[in-house]
Length: 329
Ligand code: SAM
Ligand code: SF4
Image (cartoon, rainbow, N blue to C red; front, top):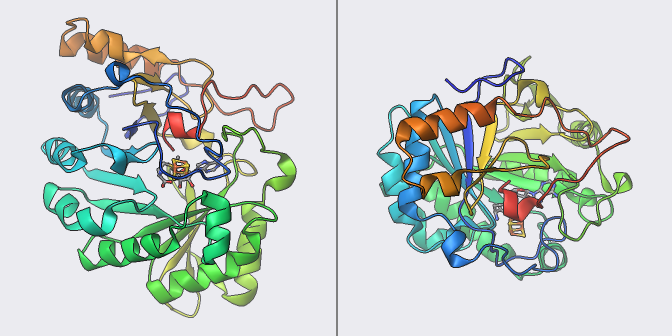
């Protein structure tokens, strides 16, 4: 069991498969920083699967593949297949993607054992989508949502980072989209993890404001009184329409107290928090001939160092040692 020093059990592992991306979202990787990790520093599939196996033996139940853009990793379907062999101890295998290659690969991913896909969609307007992501990709994301549904993945989640003056005028349109498409639309507060360092408090649209704006047009009903270790407050539509609204407010309503997450970067570093200023080198251990028991011991030790909370709202906030596309969101 992975327990930290603050009485939290860690059950959720996010694996970044690559720090590369074919999008240039202004809130994440606006300048397309050259990939930091060289080919030989990136974990191989064998190393990822071994790490995941040890994690699962320690009680990890959910694995999410992310990045950068995870679909850029060639043969990702094979990796999913290998990770799916960790079921049933592994209860949930998910992927977060900008939609790249999803229409072509959705069926294969499903057949390989992937349980869920979350897609990013930051505007329903083609020009704004280009402005936000640097890519003319709206049609592709919409097609990807259709493909994910057609192949029979469970409830589809769609993520949007809401930023003042960029897409906050679309909040109600996104909620309408959730109703019409019967998807769970998740509104995420902008966090200071962008490589362009443009984040400022003024650009954050609070979860509360997002909820109020939607509620005024489509009254919402809270689905459950507690969100457990989940990041989102989930709402259904009071009129019974399909779809769901999820509000993720890490900046204005910190949820660190119930955090169950740990991260593995593409180059094999363990991060115990999105905002960690240090990392723990699993890659070298994996390559040193260590046994699974030694790796497990290392992971238990690292987990004990998990930060109690982020300090975004503190006076002494120190930015994370790496930005979102390198960490794996
Ligand atoms: N490329 C994939 C995608 O965009 O879905 C997966 C990686 S991306 C880093 C994972 C999630 O992090 C996306 O939903 C993205 O919107 C979110 N994200 C990126 N930068 C963020 C920021 N500065 N604040 C809040 N969320 C952010
Ligand atoms: Fe790429 Fe995802 Fe970051 Fe956008 S949010 S730049 S798609 S990694």
